[in-house]
Amino acid sequence: MLIRSRKPWDVIDYKTTDENVYLNRRSLLRAMGIAGAGLASASVVGGSFAPFVSSARAASIAGFPATRNPAFTLDRPVTVEEEAITYTNFYEFGSSKNIWRKARKLVTDPWIITIEGLVDNPLQLDASELIVRTGPQEERLYRHRCVEAWAMAVPWTGVPMSRLVTLVQPKAEAKYIRLETFFDPSVAIGQRQSWYPWPYVEGMTIDEAMNEMAFIGTGLYGRAMEKQNGAPLRIVLPWKYGFKSIKSIVKMTFTDQRPVSFWEKLAANEYGFWANVNPDVDHPRWSQATERMLGTGKRVATQLYNGYGEQVAYLYKDMKGEGDRLFR
Ligand SMILES: Nc1nc2c(c(=O)[nH]1)N[C@H]1C(S)=C(S)[C@@H](COP(=O)(O)O)O[C@H]1N2
Ligand SMILES: [Mo]
Image 1 (tube, rainbow, N blue to C red):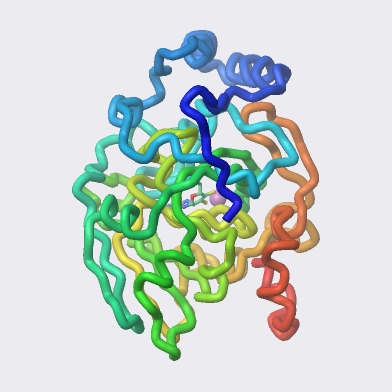
Image 2: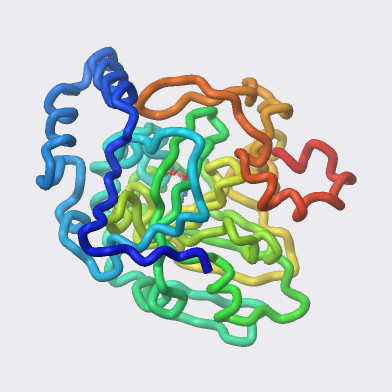
């Protein structure tokens, strides 16, 4: 296991090392007409928490920050924290990216998760307990690529998905995991929009779940997950478009049937099951050749499997029959 033991004085600095990134972000906020100056200066005051960090998250919680696993490195600066936790996709709270305040109404403690279906050890337990049973937590730096062509690079805290699979012991017939988000339109006002096929559903194969990159996220930037980022736990599949990384999970079902996701139900020609990042397969409505980094607005070339081909390409090598659907 490539886990480095961290000394107490070895503080992780999440502020990017690239000063231009920060300066550019400031001008971007200004251009967007946000009260950018205030937010921006608050975020760099050493030691004190910026206003966009919730008090629950600012409070120290056991397990945070977790030791960083140095096996997962980046080819780009870490995105400024404020951007990653205030620009989010969480349709349960509306289709805008600016839903972080609305998402804070979600009660995430206690949070019961059911793991059922074709497994020898079905479980129903609190999210915190699940993390203890699949721990220890670690931190990983991953790229994230939304199908809409924005991207970020962030330090997630969490546990490998393979530990959960091992814990519940899938039966031989199980091939897929179907994941489901909560349904509570009294809090999640986006769920009052009845034309969407709530609850949000996603899926992966068990082979994908066993891959070393597949991660259960419990935190970001060394603190517990903000609600808008999918507290108390979410999936992180960095080689796939972001919509596969389902947030605030309440149920996981091991099955022999391929799950039909929320987005696939809405628009199967745009959002398929595999959804592996591929710069050569355009979305029907836009190019996927490049992506825009949150914070800097910098355009960078999109990479096959989001740059994780070495780790995941073997999963798809015999799937030629599916043609380019592999990447939608
Ligand atoms: N339940 C749920 N999970 C979700 C979404 C959502 O709307 N609802 N959006 C997805 C999309 S499109 C992306 S890009 C990522 C965004 O994660 P972030 O907002 O934490 O960056 O979450 C994914 N998980
Ligand atoms: Mo996305």
